[in-house]
Length: 284
Ligand code: C2E
Ligand code: MG
Ligand code: MG
Ligand code: MG
Image 1 (cartoon, rainbow, N blue to C red):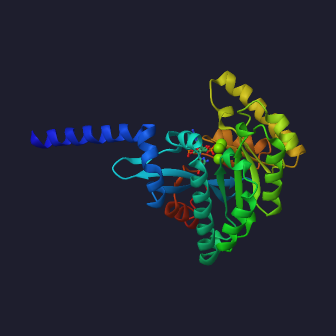
Image 2 (cartoon, helix red, strand yellow):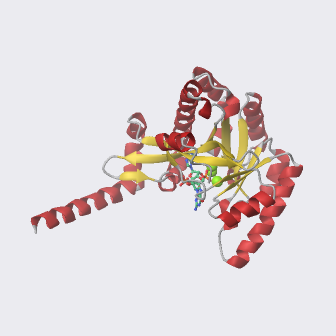
Image 3 (cartoon, rainbow, N blue to C red):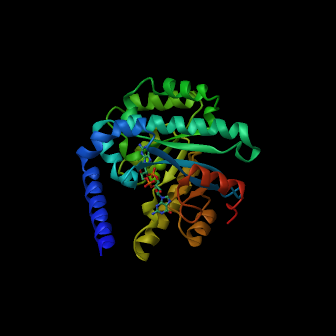
């Protein structure tokens, strides 16, 4: 029928648009306009604090809501944006979105008062000696206590100029931001990283939970050792990628502080996160 043909054609058109869009050139042509058009959207994934039995905050995760294409996940565009440098603008945009939201929460309801938001920052920022000053200025503009914001740096991005990076991290800490090492354990430099970096929080890579039951058992043993070491170093621990009750029980027993994962909730739009907190649906 005609209707069927149209639908087919529409689908075909959408697929080819999507195909072209997802090619590097298509993305590069559109990324700057997309930022201006507010096509990048902040999703929030709750973080659960074992000791207080409550949600204490969320990680901000970017999505590209591209007209005619749909929601594009960060894995499809962050690697390209790391190559061409655009990720710096995305990160700063997400940071400002987080500040705006924290200010709104501050004025809104006691339910939201102490929630923190963590923002992912690419290593490309770690050669900018003004980073802490720039972020402080944004936080001030929204009257936000920097303590409510956590900067997530990915461990495999630890790079050549370590001294400068330590300087920048110390500046961030002095300005009051919290610093976490994301995906800890995925790269090879982990332990030396811990020796030298002034971090507050350690996020265990979710890959320790993945794999067969045999590798899974080994993963658990590694998690146990990391948690013990983190405790000795006074680092707060966050397990990400938590999907099952069994993992929750294990982490609790091993003294992990905070958990994040599909078991509690997937990353969601801000309005849904607010409903989630307000309705106390977090009491799983
Ligand atoms: P990440 O910072 O390690 O974020 C955690 C990722 O794990 C998120 O993927 C999240 O959706 C996913 N996740 C959470 N819980 C579970 C679970 O229980 N099971 C599984 N299988 N996955 C879970 P997402 O949102 O696709 O982001 C992927 C990566 O993209 C992030 O990893 C981060 O490295 C990067 N990214 C996201 N947003 C930004 C951003 O604004 N700036 C920068 N520079 N990177 C970002
Ligand atoms: Mg992260
Ligand atoms: Mg990361
Ligand atoms: Mg991670």
